[in-house]
Image (cartoon, rainbow, N blue to C red; front, side, top):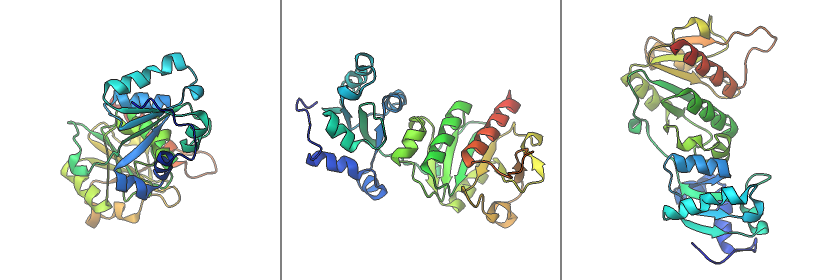
Length: 272
């Protein structure tokens, strides 16, 4: 805990926080940022121990209640640092900040580090570019009890502050990994998962596919979808099912995060 309140936006310490918006800086430091009371609270519930929590009572929506988070992180042995309003707004990366910004260890896992159950459900996101989509899929994954979310050949990294924000902190609650596509395919095969590739070009519709067993749902990049390799038996092996969502309008596809949500909830429905 520091008794000194940082009030100047030009304080040198704040420059390092602003730098963590860049991927290279995050990777070099091995850290990422959590901004927001709800996001930080969920991360703490998931067992995250922040390195430092910066807070600004002036910006808290309910300081009498939300201030308990400061006490909570101090009890964990984490450093806390109070900022003045101008200083906090300098380091905040979203509009309308609520007075909480934490520096935490980066979330990095390999496929080999993932542990799944007897009938796992895995979401695989191939080449997804937009942090908001990755974060939204994590929220759905947490809500539907997905065992793991894997980014194959990712463009956006899991430590992107906007992934953390869009996920509402569930990036710290759901097991995640990132790897090249061939490594991911090997992992899926070793766990004997039924691979279901979501694509608008499929002949079968998602509700017509049996999704009650060990399943990996594959969704692709925003513009190009999944790559052709997922349909090549020489690359993926046999037993891959292509499936599409029922579409009765003029558009032939949905946002990738929306598509993933609909497929995951169909799996939840079938498994009930």
